[in-house]
Length: 534
Image 1 (cartoon, rainbow, N blue to C red):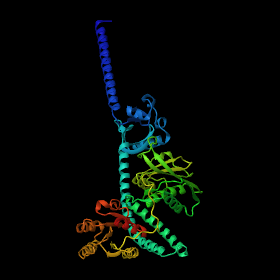
Image 2: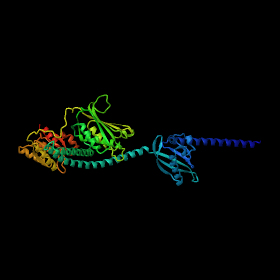
Image 3: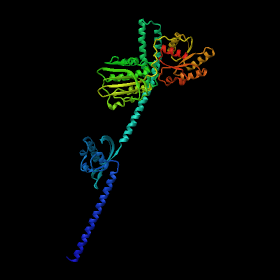
Image 4: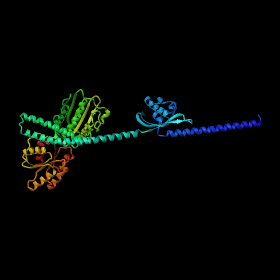
């Protein structure tokens, strides 16, 4: 081989080595770029992937790998049907085909089950073209909007609840107005029945008929109290009562005509308690109604009542002391454990026609009585409610009988202010029978004027009975302030058909010396007046 040929061969070898070196450098650069790109993709919080034209995975990032729960090497070369359940794969394939067909980038919102929870994504998918414009791949990246959707759903639910509250407020105003007017009617009815009973011999058949009419009117009174509780909730107006009578009357009333009955087991020497009988009656009715509905084929509700002393060994959110423990147990369908913690929540119900208010109101009533209500239930084996009501410091008291003899205090002057003529009429009949001299006023202004005139004439009013609310006129809240200016020692009783008005439970803070809820009865009115005049 001559020198010229040798030099050319050596040069060729050098050229080849140089080309190989360039190629090696180029491959290294490409590999470095690929690694850098993959590093960027893996550190991107959004799941990202690239599929071939036949919908097989070419590239995925770390976030996509975490959601799919498969290593990247196992996913490459596979399609959605190899990676995801068929319903999800069907959804993803349909999206890919739409992008392929339309040859444009598209966005899809989807909710899919992954890692034990539902994720909501907005997925952007786009076609990848070669130099000739042919689709050679489909790329995609997902934006997780799960939390955003949850917040939006919560806001929508809150808005729905606010709308519901507005509707309930409107209904409550209507219910409150109806109850107020109805209580005025019942005041006249009960007052006249009370008077008729006073003039009727107990052995007379008429006496029994009047007594039954009286009890029916008292049931109607409970209905109006339920309307008012629904209307505004309200603080309880307590009286000394027997829990036995309240429970039996309320439960039997609800179950009348039903194939469900109650079995009662009451301890003999139960303490009397101070309760709002209408509100506690409503609690009993709400629970018994639920029990009745849970036993469509009939059954028995067992109601027991006994003394209970709370001490440090009882895990109850109550202060230590004496209580009455009331237990109502049915053997109906029971409550699912997932729902048990929500049954006292407003608007929570598992019944198609329920409004979710009954147990929420019951819980509120018991709390306002400084008591506690709890529930035990198992699906398919019935439900038991436990109610604890304070009983301390009242065992020495006695509930006032409807028709006991009242001692008349003498010729006192009583001013009655009420805008309803029928209420004034029955009040006059009751007070006149009791021996009082009666004055009347239609509203607060007239009451103030009458009080002023009698004081100037040296015939001062001894006690004033004043309605709290006078539509279109001055009511008791404003009028009592003016009367106390005339006589700071004035004795004023407030009455109202809105028994749940805060003034009724905090009457002393507003200048009154007592409160009587309408419909008031003979003994309630005379007894309260006598007590104040003593």
